[in-house]
Structures are given as structure tokens and as C-alpha cells.
Image (cartoon, rainbow, N blue to C red):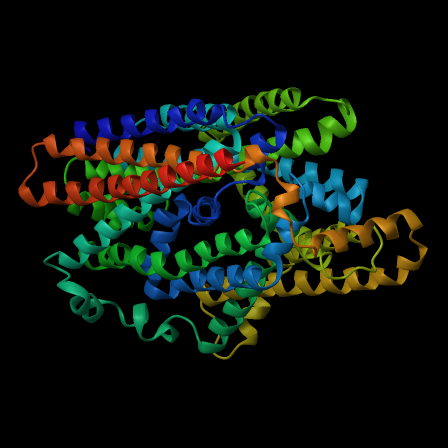
Amino acid sequence: MSNYDYIVIGVYLVFMLSLGPIYKSFSKTASDFFRGGGGMLWWVVGSSAFMNSFSAWSFTGGAGKAYETGTFFLILFVCNAIATLTTVLFTVHRFRQMRVITAVEAIQKRFGNTSEQIFNWLPLFFTTFFGGIMLYTISVFMSGVFEVPMKPIIWILAGVTIIMTLLGGSWAATAGDFVQMMVVLVITIIMAVLTLGHEKIGGIGGLVDQMHAFSIQDWTQFERPVVIVVFSVLLLINQIVFANSMQSGAARYLFVKDGADAKKAAWVSVVGFILLPAIWIIPAIGASIIFKDLGSMYPQLNNPSEAAYVAIAKELLPQGLLGLLVCGIFAASLTSMNSMLNAFSAGFVRNFWIRVVDKKASESNQILVGRIFILVYGLIWTGVAMIFSQIKGLQLFDLILLASAAIGLPAALPMLYGMFVKKVPGWAGWSTMVIGFIVSVILHIGFTNWGWLEIIRESWEPALNDRELGDLKIAYTTGIIAAACTIWFFFTKVFYKYSSEEYIKQVDDFMTEMNTPINRAQEHEPEYECDSRQYLVLANLCMAYGGLTLLLLLVPNDFKARMLVLICGGIVLSVGVVLRSIGKKRAARTAMMQGNK
């Protein structure tokens, strides 16, 4: 990278740091700090939800998969789009109508206090390692590709994430996601256009003509149709469960004003999963044509194909815009980490601190405790990342991934069923998770030590190749765990009749409230109706970022490069101008209404 690219990255990190102080004044209550007071603009929340799914992995590991398999990898995004669509149809309005500040509070309302603490602390334990893993993996990638020291990257990313979330809370995390989505969207479009214009590609027609047959026409060259179908169906089931689970799904949509806005926010993700991947995949596939051997280019990476996006960016992007791509990768990382820090600080304060330690904690005290938690927890992530950077082999890394997979689906399934199946005892949720975990461990031992994989491989005619075997392992694991958890959850219905009257009434109240639309006139305080302020702050952020990008016109590039800078900065700046116009009109309308009163 050139010095100009490093300057762009530095300016971007300072810009993200500024979001904390900018949004600090938005948080007057715990609800404000942890979920924007339930009054955020739906399209901002939708952008944040989408960005949390379209993570930095999309530009690294995801791009590597697209480099190797072409359009086959789009199956994941199709499944995500369908899964999110199911939330629009069945659950997303119910999430918001639970009328809670954290998703774990909804679990307490549905399953009781024991489940609340289990589902609050167990994810916190695993996320302690995942935060470190996220910092570590993105730092390994950046240091390997751009030949910069790993540890400074860990500290810089961690510092920006912690300070931004600590000061601004959910407002900075969520609103920042919108600005970061603009960065990712613009750079992705530019990369796609430049890839198609490369002399070795020759437009869309040239791309299609030169792609490997399996990349677009004949996926069966590396997997037989039945394996593709089984893998796709089980992947879809997995994504639907997670998208509609109270804990993982509801947490994304508690920020909006009502169920109708929650549906609109979910539609942003649906559209994003349909449109952006089709553009994003072009550079990754183009890299497979331009660079036949990434292994010789990036021997320091364990999986050189993960450098596909950056390799073609180095080939195509002028000085300055390469730095903007790195900002896009950082943006995708920061998005996930900001949201995780905010969500778990909310769980610590709302589901432990004020329920066990200080039941009379004031709003300001809750915000203070949340900020202390963010600082401590973020530093723990940093420490974990540093430890990973010193470990050779990373068996612990694999163990953590296994444990998360063993807990993830078993924890999500009862949180989905619990929204629709009333007559189960309070222990149905956590006991289903335990059953799923036991089944997961048995499957893992069977696959690794008891030779089940070879039995599966040889049971097919002809024998499965390694790719087919890997995908079937995922499918079998998902299917067996889902079946075991489902059977157990519905089996617990037998014991519902022994539930206390208090629990039965609690569940009845939860179901009634969850299915009752929110009356915004009665359930929202006036200060939460701050649409004009949200528009104006976001407008200023977009105009500032767009203006800073336009300064790259001063970099000594050729005319074509300057036009790309003009387009990139101009789009972000224009969005800011439009938002500012809307914000001023809304402010004037609000002032007029208040004057009439």
C-alpha cells in the first residue's frame, strides 16, 4: 500500500472514534444506551442488521470460497435471504412487541429466571473467545497480506471498537453501521465494475466465458446433485432457526419503534442479501481468472485463496482507494464487534446487575456499569487475541469453534419453538440445549474417533470426495441435532401440567403481549421521537466522510482514478445531502406541530 492508503485508513479510524462522543448525548436512559430507546429509524436498524451478517469474513474466507467454487457459494446468501424473509412473515414484529430492552429479558418472560441466567451467561463465555478470535483472524489476514505487524492491528481495532461503543452505546454502534455500509457498498460496486473492465476479463460476457464450468453452469462437477440438495436444505433450516430465534433474532430488531418498522428493517436485509452478493462475488471470481496461483503470491497465509479480494484490489485500485477497501474490511469487523459488545453489556446490566447486584440501580448507574463492562470485556477480547497470536497450532481455537457449534443450534431451537408452543415447562429451553450439546459431542467423537466419516464416504457409490464429505458432515450434524432437540422439546409438553400457576400466567401474559401491536402514541415518550435529529446527525456524518474521500482527488493519480474517487466520495456526500434535507423538513414539521399545541 502507498502512504496515501495508510492516511485513508488512519482518517477512517479517527472518524469511527468520533462517533462515540457524537452519540454520547443520545443516551439519557439505559434503554437509550442499550437499544436506542426503541426509537431508531427502521432503515438504520436494517442496515445494521445486514452489516452484522455481511461480515469481514465475506472479504476474506467468503471471497476465498467464491474463488474456489464460483457461484456455488451464493447458496449461503440465498439461504440468508430466505431465512430473513421468514422473519418478516412470522417473527420480526413479535420480537419488537415483546417490549424488552434485551433479548434475554424476553427469555426470562417466556421461560423464567433460571433460563434467563443460563442463556445470559453461556453465550457470554463463548463470546469471550470469539471476540478475541475476530480480532486475531482479521489481524492475521491484514498482517499477512499487507506485511504490517499483527499486534498493533489488534490494539488499534480493539481500541476503536471499545471507545466507540463505550461512549456512544447502541446509537454509535448502529448508526455507525449505516455509514460503514455506505463504505462497503460503494467500494464493492467500484471493485465489480473495475473487474469487469480488466483486459483479462472483458466484461460480463468475458467473465462468464472464462469461468470454470462448475463456477456457474455445472456445480455437479465437484458435488453430486443429491449432496448439493441435502446440504442446501439443512443449511437453510439452520439459517431459519437462527434468524427466528428469540436470542439471536430478536436482538437485532428491539431498536425500532414498533412491529411494522421491524418488518421494514428486516426487508433491508432481504434486499441486501439478494443484491449485494451478486455484485460482491464478481471480483472474487475475477481473481480466479487473473491470478491462477494465489499460493505463490501469499505463501505466508494458511489459506491463500482468502487473499482473492485484496489481490485483485491491489491490481485494480489506485492510490487511496485501496486504503478505502481496507476500511471496508475493517468496517465489517467493527460492525460485528460493536454490536456484540453492546448486546452483552446490555445483558450483563439488565439481566444480572439490576436483578442480582443492585435492584434499585438508577438509569445513570446502569449506563455507567454498562460502560465499565464494555471496557473490561473489550480488553479481555484484546488479551485473548494476543494469546492466540502466540499459540502455534491453535487446538484451542478448534475446540472453541466446536463448542460454539455444539451450543448454537441447541440454544436457538427452543428459543424459536417457545414463541409458538405455549404448553411446555420452564425448564424446556435449557434442557433442550443440554440434550443438543450431548448429541453434538457424541457426533464429534463419532466423526473424529469412531470412523463414522469413512463409513459415510464408502456408503455412497461412487465414494464421496472430500468436499462432498465435508458438506454432508455439516448437513448430518445439523439434521441430527435439530431432530434430537425438536423431539426433546415437544416431549417436555408431558410435564407442562405440573407447572405452577404463576408460571402458566407468566407465559400467557408473554404470549398476549408478544402478539399485541405497539401503540406508539401511548408507549413512546416524546423524547424518543427524535427522527429529525437522527437524520441530521447521519447527514453530517455522511457529508463529512464523503468530503474526506473527495480529498483523494489531490493524490497524484491519473484521470480515471480521480473519476473513481469522485464517484465514490460523491455518492456518500450526496446521500448526506439528501438526509440533511429530509431532516430539516422533519424538524420544521415537528416545530410547527409543537407550536400549534
